[in-house]
Image 1 (cartoon, protein in one colour):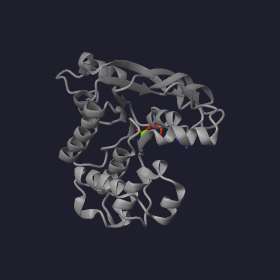
Image 2 (cartoon, protein in one colour; image 1 turned 90 degrees about the horizontal axis):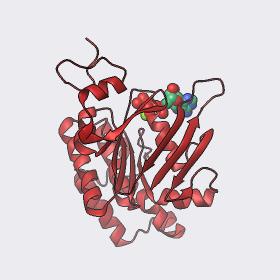
Image 3 (tube, rainbow, N blue to C red; image 1 turned 120 degrees about the horizontal axis):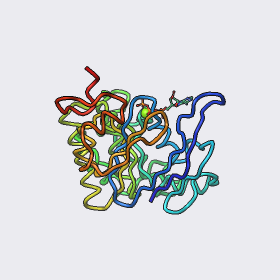
Length: 258
Ligand SMILES: Nc1ncnc2c1ncn2[C@@H]1O[C@H](COP(=O)(O)OP(=O)(O)OP(=O)(O)O)[C@@H](O)[C@H]1O
Ligand SMILES: [Mg+2]
């Protein structure tokens, strides 16, 4: 589904690379957690997959099609198949929650419908259902600029859910949510994975959520993959080592060195 081959990316010349020779193959239907300390390159990696960042070196392929070097038209076609939950949400402020979720359908509709805001009933229902699934049924008509951080994040999740491209990339999709809502959102994403085989690549800051909801753990550190293993085989000690911490004595993953 997604292939990264020898990806190196420098945002600025002379700076250390944000990604440093990353190679990964992600198969259809996998649930991959991307972990790693702040600045490790998780967002950069996700941006390379959608072509938002053009890596300095290496090749990215999506369903066998090259993303690196793709024309704007080819990139549009690829992006139509990928639901993205951005770290900064990227919502349209004056639009309502429902309007923002409908943005997820833009790629499937003729331009005149988008420009006139004439969405087919089926798309409106899909969007309403997604909002209800993330617990925002009551907020459908509220402009997102009036929503809380966690509500905005859930609008972004709903938008990715309705996109229906078979792949969801989430850049810290639950970072702003209370623990119960975070689990609810991850369960929702996993349900799509179980039911429709949606491929999930989620950057997360909570290793325990990664181990619970994902089947493969990839840890980045300073732009390199330092761990790539099935979740069931990952121990707290592995995670501590990957984060560059001393292994915790009592087994809490990611505990700081005492
Ligand atoms: N637009 C940018 N311009 C210049 N440098 C950048 C830019 N975006 C990220 N970087 C640098 O690239 C490196 C990787 O950043 P990235 O955002 O991918 O990390 P991350 O793992 O997503 O971190 P976080 O957990 O804090 O979101 C960092 O050193 C960061 O400072
Ligand atoms: Mg990031």
